[in-house]
Amino acid sequence: MEYIELSLKNVKEESKKLYSDIKKKNFEYDLVIFIAKGSFPIGKELALLNNVPLLEIKATRKGGSFKKIIKPFFKLIPKKTLIKLRAKEMNSDYHEVNSDRYIEFNKTIYNKYSSRKNILLVDDSIDSGYSIIETKKALQEYFINANIKTAVFNYMSKAIIIPDFNIYKDTMICGPWSSDSKENKLFLKLYEDWKGDYGRKN
Image 1: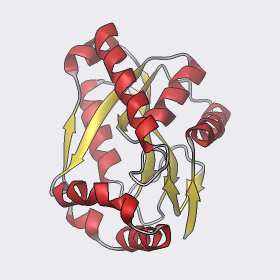
Image 2: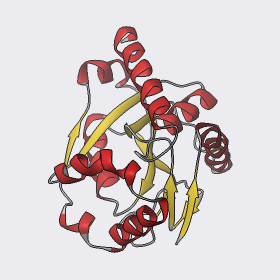
Image 3: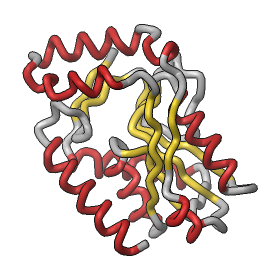
């Protein structure tokens, strides 16, 4: 399985490639919704490129608390060991066993965009597909008759859904949203700054 590391600058460049694929397939989206919070920089770039609003939605895995507890220790694990652990997780049935998701979004903010008809749902990667399926289902129930398409950097061939747009397949990506990324703190600051503006503007 291929492994790549992306900086914030790289994410911007890769988002442009993803945007080119979307334009090539003639999807004119009027709203971008990213799955918080990892795909924030991808969603932000895709929203800017098409000059449309950006919203967020959360998909929390039930039973994922253990992973949250050990995340701070990821930076202490040697890179080669961490890559092996990630590959092992991706090849396991962990995501299938923990397939239920809690979906959350701010309906007060969403109400202002309820008439949007072509929505781009963005995530950084699809491992099992459960997060994006449950998220898309919740959005389809809210945005009646909207055309919702999915865009990701990468998806795994074992996933139960194939995205509408992607640039990688079966690739492990360590982006700024990863705990062990050198730019993780900067990513978190940019996300929190956007979230502050997001709340004030809406």
